[in-house]
Length: 410
Ligand SMILES: *Cc1c(COP(=O)(O)O)cnc(C)c1O
Image 1 (cartoon, helix red, strand yellow):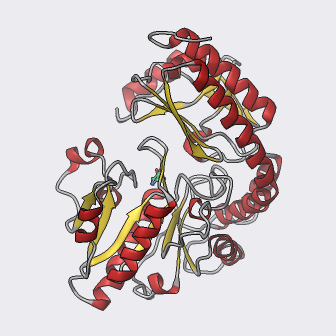
Image 2: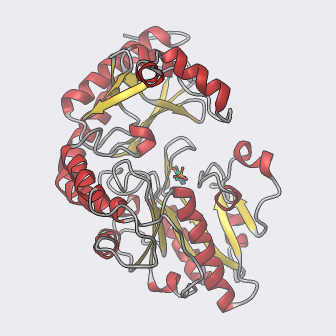
Image 3: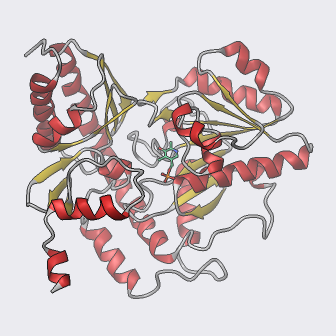
């Protein structure tokens, strides 16, 4: 009887239980999701929503993708986890695939973005100290987001995330993105690594320019420091190519790239991909994880990469269509300050705080979120079609007409 009740628990009951028993760290939207198919999510009342946020960039193939479902079924019945004490068949091939698509040479698997960042910090420290005991400093930037655990938080350049937990890791310098003189001065012999998101995600979808990334590359080389690109949000197909640093011609290669969100199509998996140089500080026993790189997650990630290769041309086409439609909206609504991003990493900045538009979007059957107060963020599944993008644009037009403080256009 109790189970039956749980199965039909109305949304209110679900929310009440959480209010009673969960750590009160999330401000959730009042939506209880039940299932998904393709780009659509369904709540417990059977209402459907076009998913333009994909679990914050995780569900890159949407929901219930038949090839992912089949792979999970097959592998779950064979081997889910065996620890890193032994080999299984999928870490090697997946690492090879990651190296081929990223231009890196070695891979470490973990379970999340923040763990990939912490692993990269450890790699940078270990290599730096081999060169000189004081070559341990980390450079990071304002407005960045690198994760929530103490290490990743230490290099996250947003006070609201950091302050309640200080003191954090020593030897971290957070620099302005615009102060070239300070940059020149800060990066030197003591610098072990420079961490940057080639397209800032949580910070409001800010692509870094090719020139600026090149400048970081030069400064890192001059100082003998590692350049680390955090592509946890902006990588693995999200920008319409495998990696955001490949958007520029010629590409600006990092020494380490951190990966997570979409890599296993919804299962938790993270990765650090790096050059031999960056890997040189780490020997057996120096770093590890119990869960990271399990057979199930790795096999699903391999399947994801196989599907991604087929999807990229379609993604680029739909992205062009979507961006063109958003620019039309920008012409019609003067409060849209900017439309920016790449591929399926899309920010629409308004000239007023717009968190309330998330609820207005839900009423139109659209799921997106707002980051940095004024930026509507969309990270749609890579399988989004032109027709679905059209639905999104029509819904956004309604949201802008009805829910903006002063409706100025169309
Ligand atoms: C989400 C994110 C992280 C943290 O990833 P988790 O899996 O939440 O730990 C780190 N860096 C960037 C750029 C991210 O977007």
